[in-house]
Amino acid sequence: MAQGDDDLRILGLYGQSRAQETSNIDGDHEEILGAEEILGALDSSRGIKNSAAFKAALARKLSQRAPIVQTVPPTKKRRWPMTFTGSGAAGTTVNLVNRPQCLFRGEKVIGTDSGPNANGDNTIISGIFVGNKSQLPTLTNNIPMSAFAAGALDNEMLFDTCDPALEITFQVSFITQSTARIVLWGHAVQ
Image (cartoon, rainbow, N blue to C red):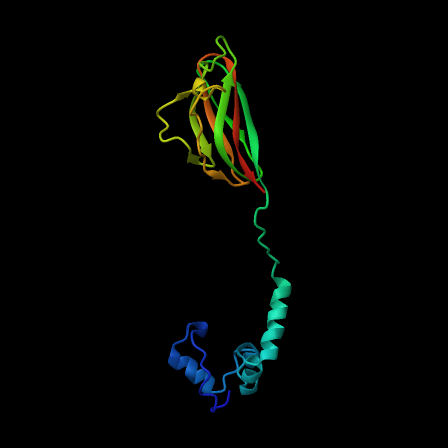
């Protein structure tokens, strides 16, 4: 490189000190192949790079490589039921899982069970989750299924919104061998 290119500095190459690199550049050391093309060292190229036409061409080229992303806001909201069903022997706990496939927020739980009494006393809800987030204030207090009977008052719950990639899970413990059936009513947004 010529002596007149004082404004061009190459630092940090090959672990050399600043003094060694300067002596390599000043001594016409040509170890860096294509330095002018890589670094754009020519003064005439600076004018081209700053021109509006070059910037527009570069933007077009980059836009051809970038994926097109369009955010579409939800347009429909409707009431939607989700069902959960599972059986178990006395003393076991099962996870009843469902994935809504769209934005969904549960609002009312209705549950029944089968078994000797079939009044909701054969099963206990020990946990409700949206993804990994608990919808109950504590996991130590179990709720009998009878609290969510069809005629029970004040059993509405406002769940967190479930994204399509997440699951809604009811942890159900069985007191006697029975089958638990839960319907979660809520709003789906598409």
